[in-house]
Image (cartoon, rainbow over all chains, first blue to last red; front, side, top):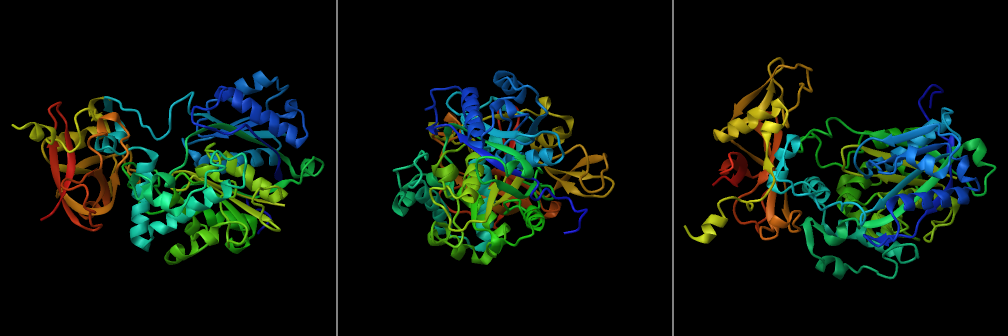
Length: 391
Length: 151
């Protein structure tokens, strides 16, 4: 790569991981803000720094816990970065980490905490769209027809992709079962001790065809956070750093066109982004050892597998088989903590922690000799992001 | 009229969110006025003739601001579809399952519109199948554009 190329490769690292206990929706006895505080304090402790060393805060998805309240509540001596990745969804989680890495590389802050907290019991439920009497603007072209939840939006894209590439239901079932399988090794997981059989998957109710209940992410309460710092500082801290090898964010041509008018439709929206990511990292898809691929819905994961170069579209039924996607012997183990489907839906922040654990060597489904660890954020939403960590 | 007939006057039950173009930006108005007249229109750029939907303030192709609503043949082809079983509003409980279709309009630059597919919701619609628009007048003063497979 030319020396003037835009890159943040190896300039920053994840050095601390913290999460609260994970709960079913409405199960957290604490408020969302308190969950965030707990995750941040745990992450600082894991990094071996004082909470008051944190001088930057970053999040995404319209997190309600604003950095200025957080910094004041935690008594941070000086806040040097207050950053949020625009857009309303989980497509921003890798982008928030990328923004933090860029800020560190640019010298804005020394220790940036990226966090996300969700108490879907305290606040509204995702997936249960409000029922207003009337709607204005772009929603007029969808909501009066009973179309508007995330599941409904991504099911329609998935159906088109399935049609174009003859994708079978088995392929999506394999993604769901891989997450549940990995969760059985992870005591943090909400679905720990609750394995999923193919029969249960097939017999589960439809939410919106082609998505069964188990194709859809959970609703949870919980918070997760990471501490990031420069590569130089990272070397002197407690744990093996997970260096940011590459980060990318963005969207392809008119993916945000309203009323589902993006010209490329049966897509997870990574066709322009993934090549940029690999170029920055200086690797090919074959070099990826493990992937955490945000499961909003399994169909979006299947599309993302193709668009990250793990298989050709016509090979996707063969690639996305349970044996291929699971630890320890699969070609590409995915969602090794259980992810959004079976660990905890912290809007994908739990996937970033798991990706870093894989680099450290501390996952409950630890991939042997893991070097390159990928995070795919929010496939099939209009604005998405990616992250690669390495040791 | 039998109670069943009253119930099935609209594809989805009464109580669904109603489009409110009057409170929306003015570049939305033309679509809903046309639907009321049982005409299908798509936003178009006077400078470069590009179609775009949903409507915007600017043409995404040439960046012209002079946009108008062009009347097009009220038909299209099924581009994608889904069958919805989980009611996202309480009012939808009795309507599930229902079909949502994404319709491509080849006569309007391949722009797409969404709607419900009328007919048997338990039959899988054919992708590529030809459909005609059905203008569903609501007594509150708006008209939805629904779709039906062409005979």
